[in-house]
Length: 263
Image (cartoon, rainbow, N blue to C red; front, side):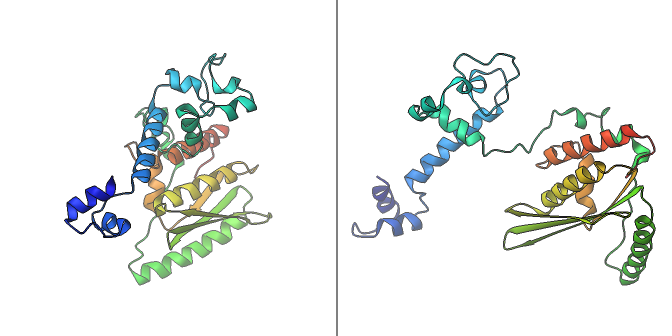
């Protein structure tokens, strides 16, 4: 079927290669196109309300009700799963590969509940002009002095993050320094994500580790992507909201533990 369409578009000979004329005519192979349509139809159910019938049937979706639906996949035995082949099973398997990114209705983004509004004096930002050589040298000297001071105080947790991309592979590394303790080093690899998302994920992991250390009241994060860190307080719709929500929740708990805590 696609071969006839490609020949008609290009007005070429009937003896031409099918793969060649389909590529020149920019026609996606029909089986791949059907897979794309099937995937979109399955993912569309991901945005349905929690009380929708499809959401109640799926096993991978957390139910808000105490008793599961009578036809829920949770009630099936393993051998019944093997016997069933259908749209619901494919949709459930696809949901296991989906990770939420947008969360626009989370209370963390409401104007009255934003963490920067409730705890305005618990945050401090310090930036520098890296395009000036003199400023860079001066700032590096200040960082050296601050690192020495923080390393001698057990109430400080010094977090250093760095992110780089090479051949579509993003590498994120975090070092957490705490007085009289071993350096905590975390390394993450990801494919086909932006630097901003990788940096936010790195900050998310480092804050989660730093806040879990007992006796820490001040967290210092050193990063070369300050604009990525400021996305935590961005209430507009952006594809990094899931990280912003997690970081806000962690910092909220950290500040409520002791009003002298800061970052």
